[in-house]
Image 1 (cartoon, helix red, strand yellow):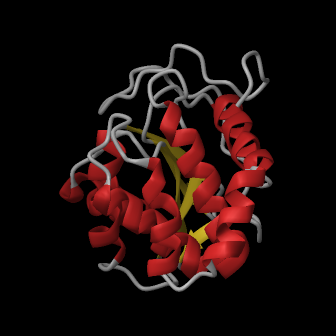
Image 2 (cartoon, helix red, strand yellow):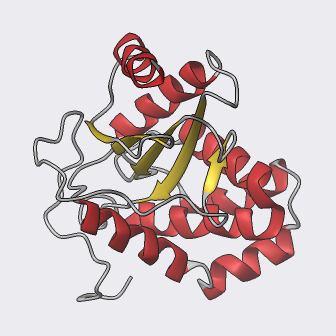
Length: 208
């Protein structure tokens, strides 16, 4: 991402408990979003995440577990890119790579790809970017097509769009998430990597 770009994140903490309150609501979920579950679910968690953030790695594991507690009519999980470039420059390339995986293989490929990154990365900008094409091969994508997408940075605008949306919603640290009740329109900001029991209780409260 170029210096001075409108989507650049400046002085953003990668924190387990960001304290800055959100300024507004997240952009509505659309068909272009990466979603685990149904867009018709009663409660949708919209997560803004950095693929090199240690708290995001922790929260990713939490969300995989918590998602299994609900059926698709109750809960779904949306992932949006929010790489904190000043702290984790490699996260920008990883976000571009994940969007390439989704572009080439759809929802399943996108989720398999970020699952793999979070599984492998030591976090804090320590992942070897040379591994990215190999991850694409592992999940069944065409390596040549993936490398071409990665080299061209064709998916960078998608990453920047997520960044701008997150900034407008008031996200300052990662993970920064919103629980949205799709029936009432109620939105609740979740700062940081909440523990599983607390997250489940918040989802249950919104369902009830």
